[in-house]
Image (cartoon, rainbow over all chains, first blue to last red; front, side, top):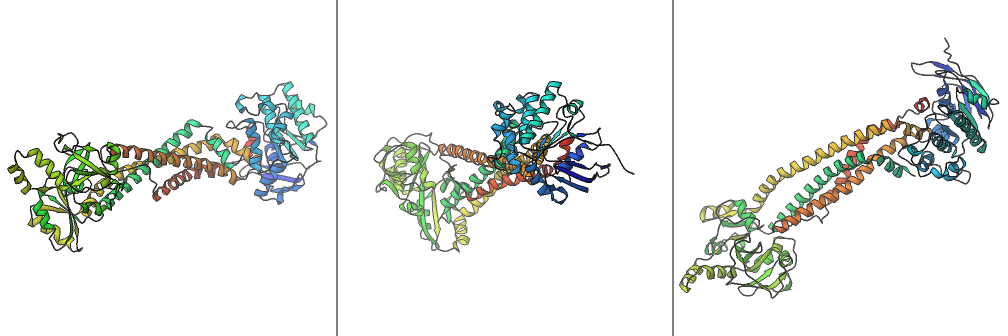
Length: 218
Length: 400
């Protein structure tokens, strides 16, 4: 779940961004919409605990983020947030399997029966046979599935996807949205998709929408 | 996957760069290791071979040449001195012991030294097999000589004139091996020891045409050097002056000459050590550039790690560990290369019957080598690690 009241962020020497209030239940889906500069990245950073909450209240997955110190936010993020960036950022130095293993390295988490194994996570997304490959050997669609497997490996409470369909053709975009929804459903996660892709809005017509506007108060 | 294995994977993700950095660090550490091994072993060899010798008396000339030829047996002696003069020194009130030595011949490059049993007592020598000489033309082989020549106890050989091994053989006066010395790690390992009378007999037989001439030569017998031990430390002041001004011989103080020699060698080892330090510093700069560019190239990877929940300290630790891996590997390779080079030089010197240097020795000072490597690597990694610590994760969200 995500709940925010009076959330705002002031960048040093930059704009003072105010965000609409939000009530998104656990397991719900949110489309984050807005033109460039409207604050989508800032809002995602706040929800992921990357930025400290300066103004207002923000509760994500049952945690009031304003009350968490930076180290505790790091640990909480590793545990509760799954992130699918637009540029997938799979490490070229590592194999697919090792890229997923980074999740355990980063969080110091130990895989339990509550989590799928790396092989299971890859297999569910149809890329189980690619574990030994390097990212450079993957197609765009395969790489995105691997990145999604990385995002959901620890069964996060919230999945944040940043423009997941950009530069994909219609079939691939449809598959990407379907996979995201399936992954969120499997782990009971809240799904947030930052997008300005009409195809995503049409595919998720029932989803809640948070429309951000570049609004700089006087 | 833990911090160590991940940092190793990142390090070898760019194998050429990693290998070049490793090579630079290794060369620097190997140079320093080699200098350390060589200088310590030379110093120890000098200390060991000089133990119990307060002065060396021989023909006038260069005092250092006298020491190098008479004690270390790595130079030609400046000449011979009359036996009678040396015997007179033994009666000097400040002298406790005089050990005469007669040189001039060699066996396959190893020097044949005529001396008295006092020489064996000086170095605490004992036979590994056989016994000491009891009459002329019996010889005892040093451990290295026995190994190199393969001569057994009971075997015989003829000496060749001169110390280089290329002179005429004294076929008419063969030696018989009566014993082989246990290794002592000192100069005696490279000597063929025999009585003074053996050396005299060989040369008297070779040059005397009749019995009268042989008797005349016997009356004018000479030795090459005399190793002197003082009865009192005060002798160090007066005895050399007495010899140098009151006799046709010269007395050289080994401590003074060796200090002078080590100072001269020290310039060379300082240069080599300086080159090693320069290589280390160059390697440090190279590691810094490599890690700095790695931070720039891997900015997204590092940000992704932060996004996945890694605290900044773990991300910075990744960079520091990469540098530590380099330091560790370079230390191992540098120490191995330094010892290997020392072993090769030791082998070459052994071929020339020179100082006994070896790569198969470990010095306590070598513990500084990994320390220096780690210090250089960590210093080089510090700024990149701070850069990694400050990775801007929010930038990840803005990457389109």
